[in-house]
Length: 226
Image 1 (cartoon, one colour):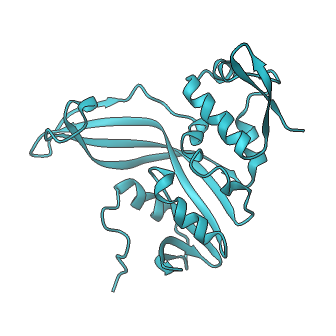
Image 2 (image 1 turned 90 degrees about the horizontal axis):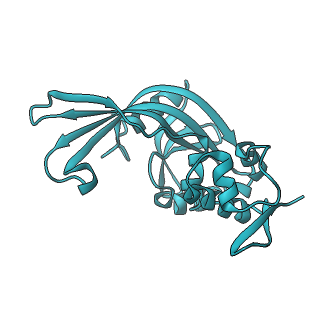
Image 3 (image 1 turned 45 degrees about the horizontal axis):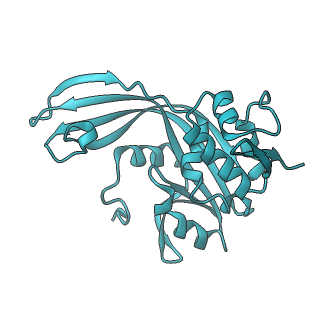
């Protein structure tokens, strides 16, 4: 009998990534240490997280004490929004103007920056293209005018990058960034909002890659650790 433990409410994106990563002899949805693991590959535990890292933080903290764990996280570079009616007929299909990059990992990394220093833990970030299915049922967010997100489907996997230790995240920092620097200077250098720059500097400080060396006006001045 198939094992359906942990698959309830699983999105199409999560299910598709699980099948994409699955290799011969892998075991799916296996109970280990009171948790259900997406993929077990010999001594490696593979977890796929498509949402907030705070939802999986406790699970990761427990598992990496005794197991090798790889966290798979998709970042949506391109997303097509598909609006459907009550009969599931497609009303409109459009490409979202929002396009994310590897740097967006810091939006979630702020919840677990201390874990990356553990040799049992790695993060694999994949850039994907998806389709987001929306239905006008009046129950969705006001930002979407009441449209609910019914599903997220994988269209394509574009690229992937693995982070095994804190230093690997330095690959995401442009070499042209001045040192020391402020969050505003970082934001301008990466051409991203300052809110993301603040998350980046926070994570890098928590990973002991960055230190505060003073202020530039009223803003903190950061410098990379040698």
